[in-house]
Length: 281
Image (cartoon, rainbow, N blue to C red):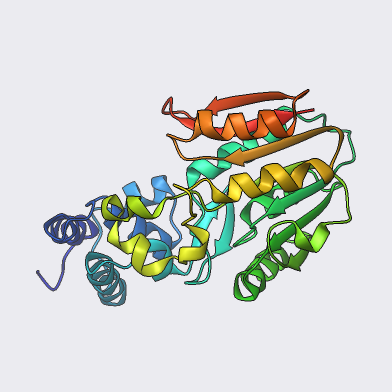
């Protein structure tokens, strides 16, 4: 690579390197834009300029790490979720765009002037709880998690984003077993152990297994929640749960039995795949 290379030239090399490593070449653009704090317009305007040596060195280091299997979010130390910057660590699941659809449904199907008690089970980075509070600041929002290290990250993210969320340590609903809520949200572990062989190795290497895998072909947590949530949900309450794309009918059946009078629906994501279960009592 030339000493006086342009951003475009360095990116061409970086993209080729990543593709040769089995990664998407476009990741080089994201790494550069995040490090430079550029938007897409900034990126285009700088492409033909000479790239400073320190910026080039940083990108080469980042690309080498990502090519070696480290997720972009762990290289940067954060991920964006609903336009909020959230710290991520080895102790938390990386927030993903699919999970934003849980928040979308909640916001779309809830009146803005309602004052609600909201529960996020298995909060991880705090993504769902923090966005819920950010979008609806008058609601009372609680997040629970079994991992004290994940909760420490969630608290840090809430403070950084200027919201007050109550975070409690414990197994699923245990910390709030004597309370009632109007809305319950969760992205629980739902991957079966048998699916490990088709998963990206970086997920297995860098994300906590307890946030990914569940027994009974990934249904164990849903089975527990179907038993525990009826006593926590207020009349006319709502539940939104992320699911695996092959789990729709099984999870719907669990919650229809748990809430026989409720409207239980499978909601699809933008790709047309089953993505969440909604329960409206």
